[in-house]
Image (tube, rainbow, N blue to C red; front, top):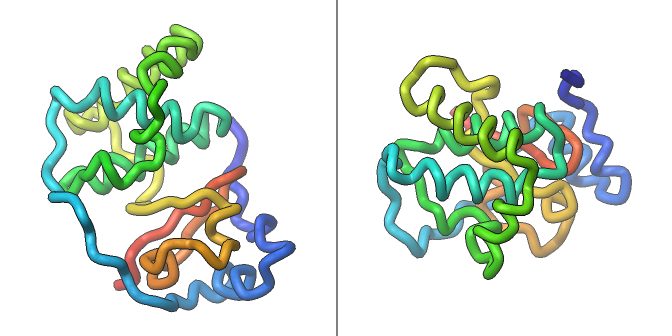
Length: 161
């Protein structure tokens, strides 16, 4: 399994974001949520697995594990609408096109997290695509987060303590 990248390589064209990555300086304010947050349950696992696959199928096994851990860490305030992949009109068709072993591994890993059989591999509670992190159109909440890890095409963050 590849080691996570901690160097803010994504910020080559985004020097301010590079500084934020290096110094973990929170900026900005969080936008208000438009949807009610709730605890996720076992019945939500298939939908979560589809969303996770749509969010990170191209990230490799470790990247997908990071995305699943982040989703799990937000479990007490889960909101499926917080993930852009949920808006895919072909979400379930996309999932069905993924390799069977990947779909099953995703469901198994989510199930083991849900039943506390395995600890999450990351403390991250939020992530965003690296292109969006460096964009002037990034969501306001991103600016107040502390970057803890950059892996392939995602920036993983926690709320500052």
